[in-house]
Image 1: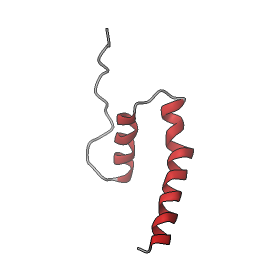
Image 2: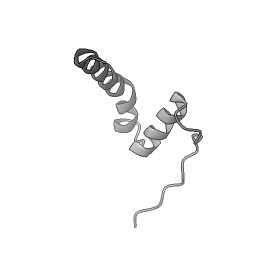
Image 3: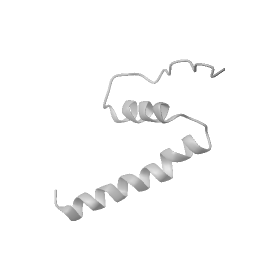
Length: 59
């Protein structure tokens, strides 16, 4: 991949994350781990399912 193609791919990926993923964390309150898990499941990168572990209270 040329440097230009690499830069273009990075910009497209960043734009996708900023437009479609980041709002779930900022406005929806989802953690980075939850967002990573959904992206991995949606992309078929890992057969991990979408069930999240229960939150541990921070007392």
